[in-house]
Amino acid sequence: MPALLGVPVAAAYHVVSVLASMLTPLFGGLAAAAAIVGFTMAIRLLLLPLSYRATRGMDAQARVAPQVQALQKKHAGHPDRLQRELTALYQAEGTSMFAGCLPMLAQWPLLALLAVLFRSATIGGAPNMLLAHNLLGAPLGSHWLGGAGPLSAQGAVFAGLFLLMAGIAWVSARMAPRPGAPGAAVSPVPPARPSAGQPGQAADQVSRITGALGRLMPYATVVVALFLPLAAGLYLLTTTAWTLGERTMLRRAVASRRPPHTSPASPPTARRPGSRQ
Image (cartoon, rainbow, N blue to C red; front, top):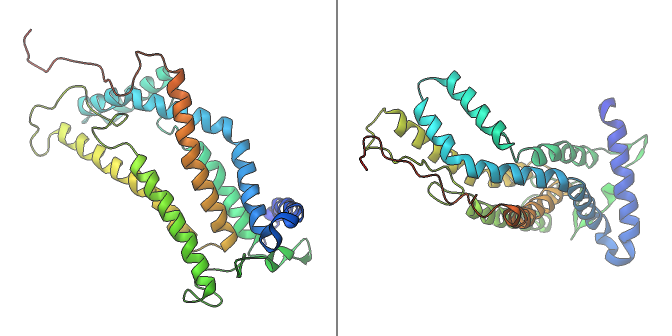
């Protein structure tokens, strides 16, 4: 184990071990798995203010989406001017192009910490006792393709984990904004029959690609879990389920605080170029 990770891994080992001891009377042999779930939920509670701020930023992004796409079409051939205009727009709204990323980025070091913890035979020179725990017979330090393999009772536990994660990813993808839906990037100025190669069509294609990536990204957690110990996969399952519920509740909270006239589903109206009144 790298010396730089020694202290945080030892701290995580102590926290999870204490939680497992406290939960043993309730969960018995599943106490360590329950401790990982509790550890994950405690981390998410600590990140709740950051998640709320990120949700407000994403709400602001939805409000300015029509202006963003209009700027993309207007300055498609001038990337420097487009960057300046977008930066000014996001600053005026109190958000950024990366709103919503901070809670996710804050969790990757913790995921890596758990992965290292359950790959280490010793912690601080002493045996790693957490490796003796299991989830329904599958050791928490085991891997999907390791040990008894995928066609075993251990493989069935991993298969159940992956199916649950895929189900959460499917619901998250269904909730992702689509082009033309409320909160999606919709241009306030309908394009005048853009032909191939026009900036307007290029911006629309970028918008569609971005939307498709947004719907595919939730499934990335399933792919990541294929290469992690079972304990780290359990962390991913818990945090993605938490994210789904948290996002739903925080969006409602942010929407309830939004002034009535600032609905993201009502982009500002504008005349068609060349239209007469």
